Figure 1 (cartoon, helix red, strand yellow):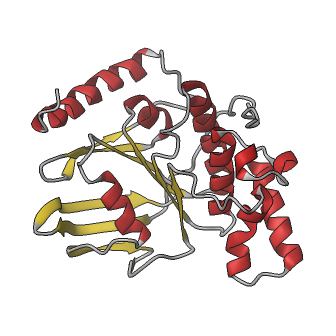
Figure 2 (figure 1 turned 30 degrees about the horizontal axis):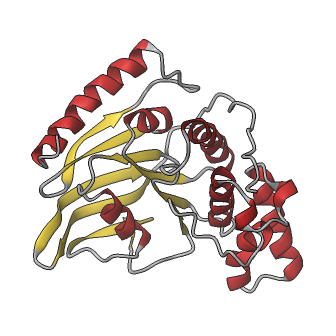
Length: 271
């Protein structure tokens, strides 16, 4: 039987110092597949230690843009720069967390988290200490000897986050990491992610379809247009943490962004 997800205490208030510089710069990026334009001239600057959500309907290019930052997909035109250097491929400095967990089923939770340091040929004791540290950070220190099949969905995603952090990346890229989880577990992990980001000081780019999730997490929300994919607007979220989804300011922002996203959904003819 899968283990029951671990519910951590509510996250403490999050305070972030003002970002000192631009961490990620996207300049005139377009992407075509088989002659069809998926992204059209995207320009965007993301500050160091900021939390940015990419939000929009399916097919607007959110994941494509994330994969270009990761170095998995090259732009057709334009360039993506991290710390002023053009992205030319994947790098351990850009950790990626997927919706599908992507854990090795034959490795324990501890061994999954150790995998990055193993690839870097770190000594065994250092690998284990690193893995134990990050399992502790995500609340799973006591479950390190369990295999993925023995963990709940929320616990698997915690392991995936710990594995990404074990390489000590400065950028954390997350492609709908909580999309497959039940509502309660999803909200718990949103709170946990904010706590982890406060402790680890990462620049986060997070893809989501959920307006509420974006407002709860982000410093800024990039609302994507479609046909072809592009940036429709960038919304700064100045609501102080911890954020209350029932707060009037939260609800008003959710209503406004919903209208903006709905306009893009209607272009697709699915409503």
